[in-house]
Image (cartoon, rainbow, N blue to C red; front, top):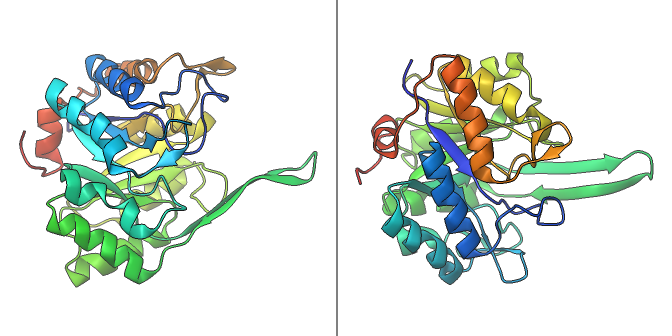
Length: 285
């Protein structure tokens, strides 16, 4: 099989230090944990930004304090998130693309409902909709196209693959496409099962690449399935707070190390950032 690309998703936009005090929030913390993930074997880091109070932000200057040190100190492939600060206007959410022209950027190619219901207390703990029109999606895609940034197509359910194929046919997306399967998140996302993953992989165009992520307890079972199917993987505190049942992860690098241990047991070699650029048809560093 092709060497395995490991992506580390460092902080996300949902949970903070109250959930796990080891989640990095400020730029210096994020940069340090990204460097540790590179040392552990990750080739890509998926970057969200937080403001001084730990809230999600799309502020270009905050992203700059993360992006520029990582470009200077590492050879990592940097994937910037355009979906993290979902309550902000669309133009602000994608402003970091023309500002930095990153190798990769996340592209949530559809709308999704997410919710967690507390049956005991009969209340919603999480309840929001990420609503995007086709015009919004085209704007995001063309912004990436014009700036030489490859979209990482975030697939929350099977129908989003149809959206990707539509924008490919429109010329907004260029092949080979790169898909990121989000599995096991409560709400309108694909359930984390081997059968569903197989269906997703069989539904994407020939020649595409894909990575698998599992949310929470599904992280390591689903990334293991992704390894076995020849895909790539994403781990990190954005998606999962625990290194094992009941034990909080001490860092993103610890999650990367566990994933790489599983990969080597299965006979998958680990890709360097330069090899990841080649496999994903990115600009060479």
